[in-house]
Image (tube, rainbow, N blue to C red; front, side, top):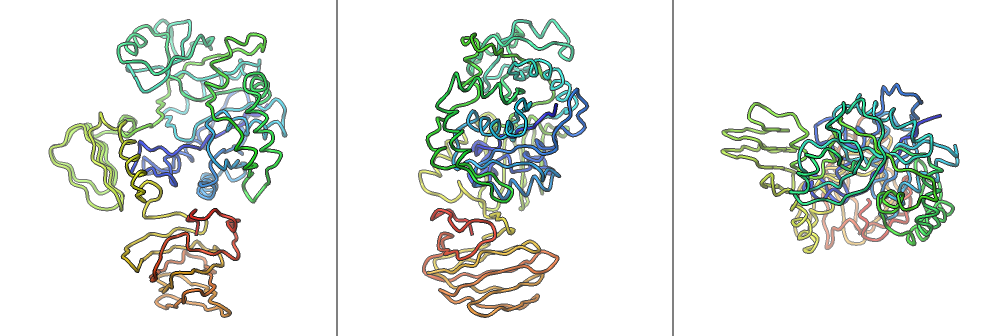
Length: 496
């Protein structure tokens, strides 16, 4: 028996704005200066010594917008053998798990799936491994196992799982799996305090261990329309490089629902299924890192309770989170504050108001501000570009192309471009000619000229691009050839 990790990497993490953006969500970010959250999830089972072996090829389910970043991060984490299932649009966690289960049963009908959201933190992987091992027996026997987080405070931001045995009466590490009595919605504070004092309610983690065929059996009975749509989407899908592209039209018919609502909450009332819901208690430094106050709570603190990253200077400041991606940030006389600096936006908020950041994001969306979608630095499969400056009829970008990579063969209707090589070697297709450029050399791409930029060297190609014209939007791109399958990107997708 092989334990198959399934990583659910959807969502946009709007409460972690301005670092998390629609096209660069929190699971692709590093909140600690090391691995990204996706990479930490992919390597979370390293060293597992339980009763089953762990597959080294995780199944990742993500939105197609994040496909290249996700693939690159998985490769960097040493998990390049996995399968990446691409959703054309989000349909919540139940369809995502169904797609993964349908893929897994093509290899083993009784595949054992460990379902992990990509945007969680687990500070004690050893205790997490022990909890997984405790869950394997019930899961192999046909139960659907979820992991209940032992609460350390009354929390109104999480749902709860009710169990029969109080965790106050036993050693958590020795506590056996418990029957799942009920799911409880996010409670008011007074009720959350009662839950904490009673010991029979655990936080709902969104982590699951179950057999793929058991999940599909439950779905066939409890959500047959969802199962049919996902099966049609898989049948009409295609394999594209590292990716499994599911059928867009079929998936469009799929209902949107969570694992909890679609199946887990209905198990108690569906006794004819013969599938039990089971809870394994977990105390391993878990956090869903849903907002900046949770990032502060999960981070290391100095003697004054502060957590900082980047070039930060503090004076008379306590219990605050300060992160800067570039500029010096100096804080004087702050208490319980969040300060996040990015090249194009700065957030300053009281720590107890971080749940309301989505109000700022909603205003940005309503005003069609670019800060909600992309950072100033935009990642592409060939590297990235950083928009350094712009005006009415010009834009300046720093472009970095990875060794062996190339941009699409393309042309523009509304702009011309000047390219100056800062580092490396550039191979430039310009109309019918091919030009090789070294450091400090430049070229000009007239409006309407077919062109391509390639890096034939062994180091990053870095160059400055100066655009000029009547319209400088990223959707003014006509692709003629592309190495990354983006010829049919939707207009306005900004996938250069």
